[in-house]
Length: 407
Image 1: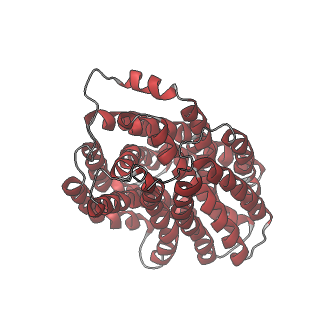
Image 2 (image 1 turned 90 degrees about the vertical axis):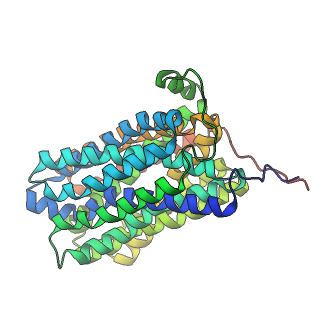
Image 3 (image 1 turned 30 degrees about the horizontal axis):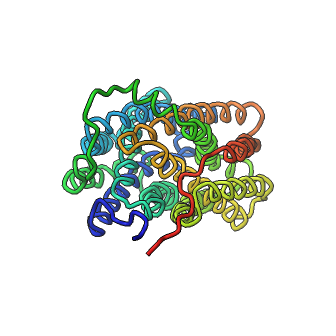
């Protein structure tokens, strides 16, 4: 008898569910990260500085974290489908509003609202993907679902944005994703079951009790700190690297777009391969190797000169590791640590910790440092956070030890 090989869904249903959830997360990634490639143009048009870019980035991350915390728990209690569809509808209705901003205050306000929509979708989609997957394919499927945010938002978006800016104003670019958002919302309603095939917990429940239960697991507390590290790396590089490449290394705008696409393409490949590998050899060894690889790559990136190929390679491998680490943290490690009825709550708590501090405060700190000490120093904070993460990773409890399959 194989190790728990039966899925709660037929393979075809599993594939379609993961595909729809992946498309939704791809749109979330576009909304969050597309603006990074536009920041140099937006900053010039709206008269923004490095500190303002950090504020805009941090505001969305804080809203994302708060939404993940509350809506992740809500989706565990009322069902995932309603939360998924509602967040996609709100996203679709408002994504074009970023192009209407007339200054810093209005752009921050719009990004806060979008952060709530994106943050609500994230833990519910992770929980739904895990529930749709048999244990032996959890790493693989969560990697496929998560990779679309990086492929669409950080891979294709910088290339598309830099091309579109030659023909249309930056304000109209956001509106291109309104219709796809509504289509994915409709498909989610049609295809994702109310509770994704799992029996939701019926009984006396409230958010405080759920959060206390989740925080009682040592792994969850460690994962919260690790998520802070991953978000510090991701948000700092995606928000400030375009200006680092243009202002410090003096690349051309098209060259900057090419280098920045390495975040998406590297993250996509890493998110597919490393979680899949963790299904085979365990989560903890893959995580420790990923931390070492990410740290080495960011050090090499900080030493690289204005050479597109070298910069692309360093950034590609750094994000190959970091995106996989992020995926393992919010997906398999969270889900396998807590009971099934608390999967989205656990992901929401971990995401909130990372977004509120790593995603929210880190870009504000880095933006201040870049403004006052020079943008060439932006990579040292993420490098230092990876050193701390390696120590924390040693303390993790393995949730997927190698299993011998008995026939």
